[in-house]
Length: 257
Image (cartoon, rainbow, N blue to C red; front, side, top):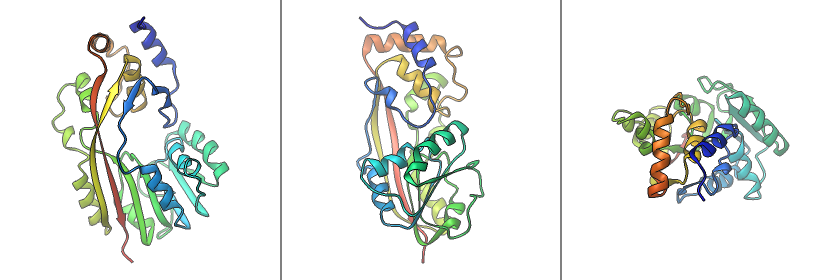
């Protein structure tokens, strides 16, 4: 017997959304993963350098996984930055035992580091890449490796609640990222875009996702969108999972020697 709308809503509203771990969605939503395997690439790059910086590390889960899942060690100098206080606490608890220092940072320029400080900079799903700062703190010959959210990602869900968003659909174009990186003096050596299938199996998964990824539907609350949520619940019950398209792009850029 399927669970009621009220039960699903109550559960999804009560669960913590701290950190950047989406395991609560196991069995409730699926997201196809990019073919390049970002965490594996990140792990391999970390093993090759003496100093690295992970920007906007969230709760530190991706960086920790690059070490623990792939049986690697962190570089002698490993720093991670994060702006949201609950995530700073979580990342500190997770990453300090592995040898990484977590720095509370506003995610606005300037980065709190000296020029030419790091061999490698990584970031998974940065809200914004400040290319001039990335170029400044990279050592000559150093690299930036990142997986960014691509254009109009999960916009089927966004536009279900907000209506058509033609201007917003133009944002996060990987070619714009290329131009900005090159304007900062970096050489883009890899740029790949993939469109991937995402499914939400119940309304609780939708609510949890929108509570956690707060920029998708800014200011989202259940009360504000209650009727739309109820209609979407009935749609999922009748027709099956709500399907959306996730977009991701991989970008690697190097600072010339």
